Length: 289
Image 1: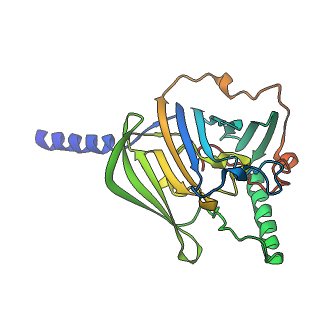
Image 2 (image 1 turned 120 degrees about the horizontal axis):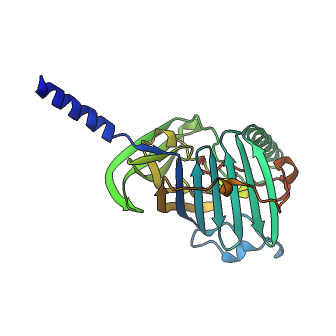
Image 3 (image 1 turned 180 degrees about the vertical axis):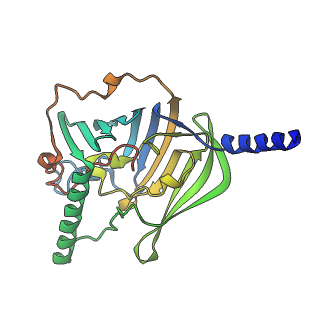
């Protein structure tokens, strides 16, 4: 009898050990690079007529992220040579607030999840009508925003250390309409998960990037935390994002999630014309890309 009890406890212990531990507080540092094709002319930073900024190309290069998580609140700061942004996410209220500093201007806006879905549907419908009417309009592959698309997770035997954690290599394979497949390479640690955040470093959090990025589907199927991912973007770009430091159970003050009082924060509906008359994408909450 004692022998049976011993093996039973050993089996239970093995199952328990294999489950990732879930944390509700953490601080994560991430570096993201958007890599342009070698043949892409850096002078395209300017508009076609030589004046004004080309917003599509100004997002190329390196971005530094710091993400704070505490229960239902998430705060993500993003810094690059041209953009500084802070994104606050209240998962309980389903509300995302963004403060952006760019070209000497600071703007703040907020949007609910429901408003975001409605605005994106409206934008997609408008773009579809434009493509029908204008046969000369350049046809780019449109990112699929359907999060219910079938996703296959293929785990490999490869592993490597990222930010001190042994990570497994896997592929997220999404099957889109007409059987087309998108593949994203990920590296994840099975040691832990972070509540409300599946990974960090995604550029979908920025308003002008929402329509340029494919949706990162299937993260809910990963038994662990994604520490690195690599994916293709429109116009031949490639995104590589890797976590450089993780501090689990870090004591984070509630004041970190307070909105700045010196910035006027408006509804997203009033701010949608900021980036190219509403042609840009809309926000996605940090960690949900």
